[in-house]
Length: 225
Image (cartoon, rainbow, N blue to C red; front, side):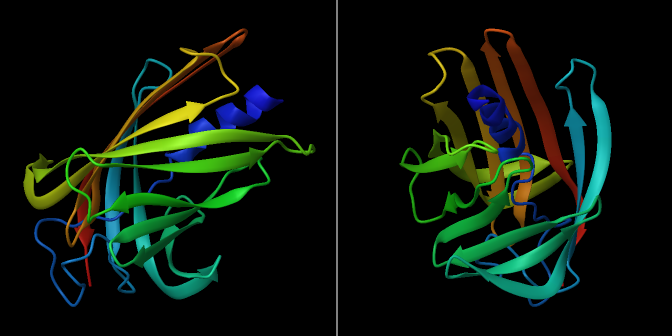
């Protein structure tokens, strides 16, 4: 059960990461110095390539900023909707950016610190998460090790974005032996835009459990209000 719950965590933790974007330079009243946009009616479209099974599967989805906010653990989160169903919750607290994550099939939810814009390249931050195994009192300790890899420009789908922060994340799980879990997670956030690209590569190989996640997501187009 501990290993199954861990796989569910690893497989879903970064599949619903912060999704914000723009087709070129941001326009309208959205604050360009931030890395999210909470103007109601703003939309972001993404293209996803899922190669987890070896054969790439292409899909598209849209994220829409609603006119709603909600308070979670003392923080005000703006609500976004997914075209495939469900919601996303994002918060900006000064130079720190958070997402409220709910893991299907696991009873625990948590607030994930996905971006710290005040850090220089090479600086790091860790986040410890205890995940509760369903129908038990057992918890699994997981560490999200994050690093600001670079601050630069980046071209995605022919569009050159300025003031882009590249975050690298590694998932560490004490219940698994060394080498059983490997992860390489990269996310690129553009100022005034949000997430413009992400790459999630995770491999779990332990006893009879073999799971792979290989998903690449890019910003296709958007309309910021």
